[in-house]
Image 1 (cartoon, rainbow, N blue to C red):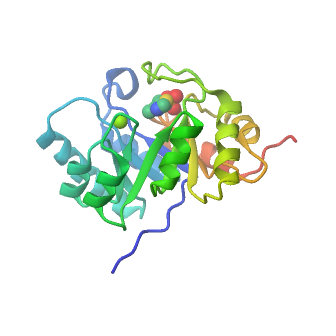
Image 2: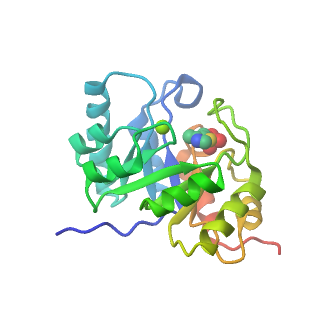
Length: 229
Ligand code: TZP
Ligand code: MG
C-alpha cells in the first residue's frame, strides 16, 4: 500500500494555458520553471480541449512533477486523473460530487474542493475532502465567472467555522494572490484556531516574466510569518 502522500500545500500552482496568461510559451516549461522555484503542488486546469488531448497533456506534465516529487492534481476531471495515475483532483461545487469522486479514486488520492461559503466548506470537510480551496479572495481577471468574492474576512470566517467544528482539513485560499498582497492576505485570513496551509496562485506565477524567481519569492513570503502584527 502506498498510502496518501504527505502534501505541502504552501505554494500551490494552478495552471492556465489561455493566451492572456501563457502567451506563446510552453506550458510544461513554465511549470518546470516554477517547480525549480519551489512550487509545492500543481493543478492542471484546462477548460478547453478534448479528452484525449487533455490526457496527453496531463501525462507529460506528470512526468515533470514526478521528477520534483510534487503532486499533480487535475481540475474537474476524475477520468483524466485515473487515466494518468496522478495524485488527485480538484472539484468545484458544480462538478462531480465528493462522495462519488472518492469512490472512483479510492482513499489514497488527494481530493480538493472549492468552497465559497461556510456551508460548502463544512460539507466538504464532513465528506472527507483533503483540502479546501477557499475563495475567491479578490476579483481576478483570471476567473471572471466567480460566484463569490469573499475577501480575506470571508476566508477567515470559514477557517474559524471549520476549526470550531473540529475539522483538520487543510486549506488554501485562491483569487488575486500576488507578491504584494500575499502576507497581508495570510495574516488577515488567520482565524483563532486555524490558519491557511498555503496559497493557490495562477497569474502571479504563470504570467510572470521569470516563473522561477517569482515562485522563489512567493515561497519565501509563504514560509515567513507576516512582517507586521
Ligand atoms: N478559482 C477562484 S479564483 C481563480 C480560480 C481558479 C483564479 C485565480 O487566479 P489568480 O491569477 O491567481 O488571481
Ligand atoms: Mg470545476
